[in-house]
Length: 263
Image 1 (cartoon, rainbow, N blue to C red):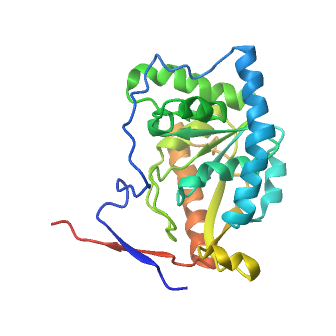
Image 2 (cartoon, helix red, strand yellow):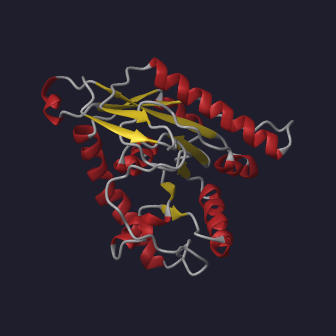
């Protein structure tokens, strides 16, 4: 399959190629990171399991062409909370952690854009989005929300690359910042790598390649190291696994990315 288009980039860390532009709302201490209203929570549960889950399954199976490899590894961590780290290659990436960890409830650490659209922002939060604060004022509530979801033995998904590069077949550089959570909370981290494959049979009508999701064995913070060094080591282990899988698996280049030198 030949690349359908070419995208030129200059900064592999900060360039973002997500479709559509949203006026970003400020997320601060006024944002309700945890809603304890019973009616709200029951409604969120119904929306998640009876509406979103079947829809996600259909979209993922038929439109995205999702297949799993080594998904059974998640059984090792299903009795407790854990963090799931993935590469960010589609606008619909938010579907993947929920599908992967089902029936465990999943929350996703998201950009403020996720809660910047009227009405839709309420649905996104009900489905598990935890927006990153725009400044320090909302950080306390944000961290308390992440901690609570882990204590509730849920899965918290993170895309450490931060920005979306549609159909990108490599792994972009990312820092160890987001690996502070599993070190601090003493829970495992699992890597989730999306690669792209040719679709066969009737599914070729979708033109775009299908997604294969490969999971790592759980990674644990090294208690013998200082928290900062353990955080760095955990990041390196996840990054090495991701780059290994992305280079070894069939990975169709539907969009070609070309680095443009700084002017």
